Image (cartoon, rainbow, N blue to C red; front, side, top):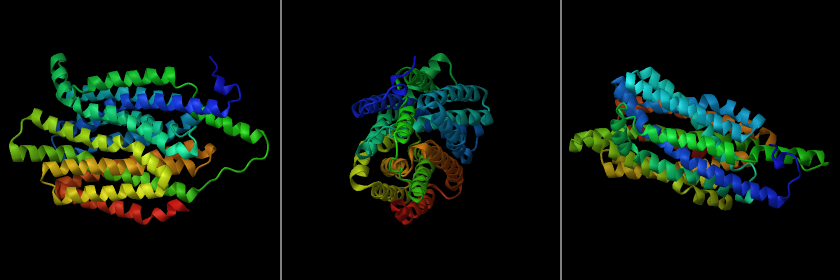
Length: 419
């Protein structure tokens, strides 16, 4: 069936209606995506350490997630530009489902390299999931761009918090059905990914990016119009700030499950189930920080400005990293640091993504958005590997101090975002 938005002129009210529907569909998809990826965030480092027998290699799990996202971000962005957001998002769901099946097989056969292959495929799926925040800005009015983006990011809170909390029930269910150790929670991931795939196929109509492209073509064909503003320097800073913030968040967060496991065993001689519960709860609170306040940061970005909100995020990062560095041996302090880490990521990512979109003409947006996601995920992959080495050699507190240097660089370069 041909979509009305591709064949007839749209009024302003109709565009607003399409945008409202798009935000609702994307938000529902993010709930499901959060459930699916929440288990991967929590279990990746633990599975990598278990299968490899070397905790210093635990960072390779998060590195593989981000590597998969980095490899697929630009191709999926190009596909979105050519065939629409719906095609790119559903293809990402397919990658993730294949990856989850591969991870379960790797755990059953205890093959560490195969585990990394599966996690790379899950990361490829995450590349599609990341595009949701940009899809929320395709038809957004400039005065609401940050809030619409923040609303979609916020929706990940529900699934993102539930995902890590499914670790213990997942383990119990996995034992009942005979799944490998630590993989039971992936049962919930499979169901969530399938539901998200069906949702996008059925409900993301008309496609927001295709509508935006059509509106832009119609404006050009109607006669002389004011040229779209292109601010390449500001766009480059947006790419850098988003990537740097993701590096800080991913590198510290990826090593926290391993660090908490050490604290629990050394301080309390905790059982495996207790450690899993501690890790799942901590990551759930971290994810709540990442997504729960995103509408607030979106509103701040619309009201105070994109760069100012990025700087708020860097301030939250600094508070988090100093807490982790000074009180690295205190479980409660580590939990607080992870919550602040999530809040810093939320402010920086929502504002940085909004800055990138409004600094770029429609024709160039998919390409630059793909470059941004590639830079974000590739640099985080390197950061996660280095984080594992730093944790093994120097400890968790030193890792936090290294990340603080990235925060300083993002802050010092912020004037570029206003050019």
